[in-house]
Image (cartoon, rainbow, N blue to C red; front, top):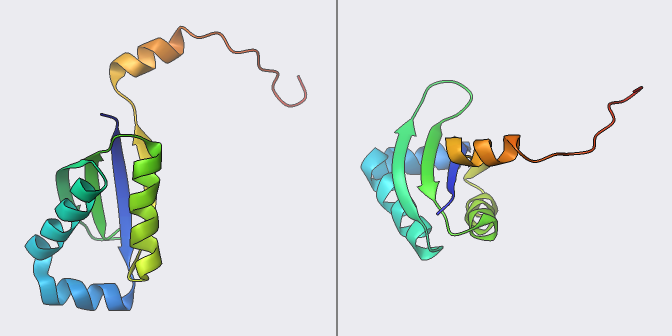
Amino acid sequence: MPKYLFEGKYTAEGAKGLMRDGGTGRRAALEKAIAGAGGRLEAVYFAFGGTDVYVLAEMPDNASAAALALAVGQAGTASTRTIVLLTPEEVDVATKKAVAYRPPGG
């Protein structure tokens, strides 16, 4: 299954929920939501800085990953950024594909 990195940033309400549920409670909620979308949670890490939480998950496809991100966003307690991750083997395939491209001004 493809892997995705979700970066989350809590709103003030989301931070209150994190304080109430704790990190393990949020991990359990994420695990349930990801499984409900057909995926599997690999890791959750909370962080300092502009991103509050990093979630690494396997999802069946882009539509499932988008559905998860939309569900989180519509709840209004966090915003997400979704990054599609590629394996080294997928990059190998990409490097062998010819693409006709003309750069700007070229």
